[in-house]
Image (cartoon, rainbow, N blue to C red; front, side, top):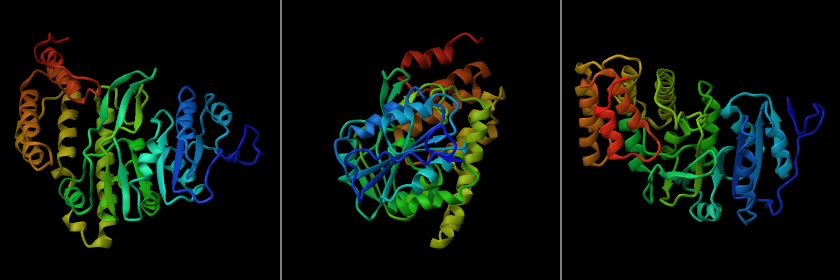
Length: 358
């Protein structure tokens, strides 16, 4: 069922935002599930951008709180659909737009003033994806820390394609820090295994066009304990198992996508990738098991194939060795330190290493 008000027979709400262009350059799709507390701020952050060459559509993905009332108060073009998860809601919103580029903005995130001007100045038909870091804030809007993740300014295609083939990943922001060309979004229709939207299209992008990376933080990423990514919560067996399963399925989807380019055989196997092995290492610790030492050399070899600075690789190597040897309670504290999304200090690290076991 698709409605535009609480009445089942009502037509979709199509109160266009003022100043929207008849031929928009960028579409912003906001999807919301039970984010009544945040969604108006997300919408306002778009409406206040001060330009008219964009289009906005908001999708209420079957919320059971007051999200729909909050959305309709803004006057933005909006649809209310039955709950189907982020990917389905994003695709529904995508189909209501026509712009050549799309930004899927989470309902608990926001754009900073002037963000759209900066973004659109860097878009052209050869760009498959543009990315920018986000500033971390808490539920009340206070800044937790800076860039998620820190990014350099660059524009490339071949380098990132090689990196994806070799490791399966590259450094990329959460959903709200990405803009995708319209044809790339079509690949989402094949991802029936995934409820999230920031999966296959992130890593397919460099095979369809240039990836533009901006170092300026253009949005706000809210950490409040309900983030679907799990950021802001300690690593636990359920979320780690989910991460591993998603990664395996996304990599297999990417392999089938790469058949059209004759590159499928060059894509790394999941169990030879650092992401897969690191998550399994963390899963052992989170599950109360000591990581198997015989698997440690393979994990470290894969770490050194990654595109991290040498100093980072050395530090993380030592981290893995220490975590593998510590009693489980301390190893869990060490992993919590590694996955902590806020500011981390030497004191926090020392507490994880020598603190008393609970």
